[in-house]
Image (tube, rainbow, N blue to C red):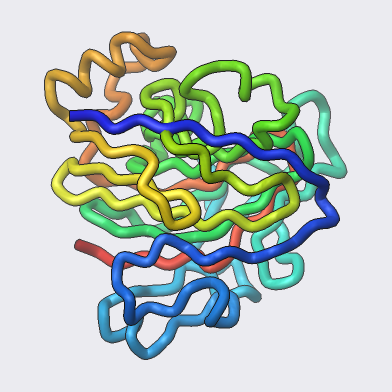
Length: 253
């Protein structure tokens, strides 16, 4: 069974409020009660690990590279994509930013904010192999978007919180551009749940016949292997817009 959802929001980048994330365990601190990029004792006991400590890109690399591209920087305790050297959607020193480690069954939590009219995404089960030209040719994506003015917001399944081009999210819970959004991606033996700002917005089962039909009806239908992998890298997408990520933490299931 599929649960679908969509999000909308508008605002300006000067706003920078922080909202509580989708905590599946009431003992875990929310974004409002814990400092960024730190684990509480309860989170440590529950098996959570930080993927970003607020000061270093250790443990990350750009797609098809050994190190992070120079456009990925740290700003105010967040991973930021610097678009100063952008041509079209291409950024010198960019490329999608991948975890060095790969993950199978996992629970991932993070926060993102996007520039006005911006576009990015969080991908999972990405395969970093030469035969794949782009990370999104292999790994599904949770859309990161300013729904108020980016053209993708007019397309169902392309809005913030959507499982990109596959399932629309519902209800709409995204915050405006310039404000932090809390995301949780939980994949347990193919049972995929997406949460945006504390609300479950997508639920589906990966790798079933119904899943294969979704892929066959999407832009990914001509990409061999897309959506079939049960382990892979996590990725923060370079889509040519300024985007920030922080509080990135994961636990294996």
